[in-house]
Image 1 (cartoon, rainbow, N blue to C red):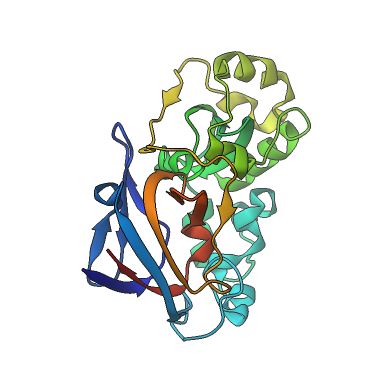
Image 2 (image 1 turned 120 degrees about the vertical axis):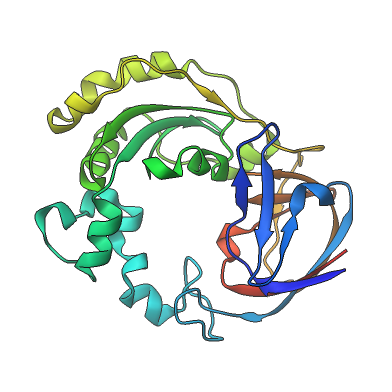
Length: 263
């Protein structure tokens, strides 16, 4: 069977284990059903997720012009502290920015390769943790807009990591942490504006990923350099497909590529 479509990040279901779906315009693949099967991934083109044109992908699934012009790729996406919709100030499109920024946001601690702090919209819990390959996570602050979440994350970066080591995450080179204790220890560093939104009582969320075999030395598949790859799928974690030969493929990092998947 052959499936052809534009890569976007895999959709997920929070079950045990996590269920993954690669969704194309007219079809989808339940990726868990492909575990222990040999599949082929072939690059056949590019399609910008914004304008839809066959143009080289620059970043985040967008061509260069869309990345610098469209509101979905504004700097505040990656740096929430730059959000200005709460002030009525436009970056690229105030209506879009108000829709996204002026809704409940969560500041959280997640343990993927180490304990890290992050920000996501409340509606994206636990999807955000799944995408990061976290095996445990907990909310620490719930605020009414993206700006407050952003300045809280910035304040906490001095005391806890804000990045994941993707290689360690994929190798499962992690240890369990007491995230509730981490939350307690970080409370005093939360900015005054966000202190009223501190979450005192909740529990850790634990996630189980469908992995039969972890890679010993993960090597990343770049379809622009290796446009045709065949391997046995042995695991899925975060947004990565893990193959028996230690090859790993980050689906989200390759959004906008048009691929042909056969098995």
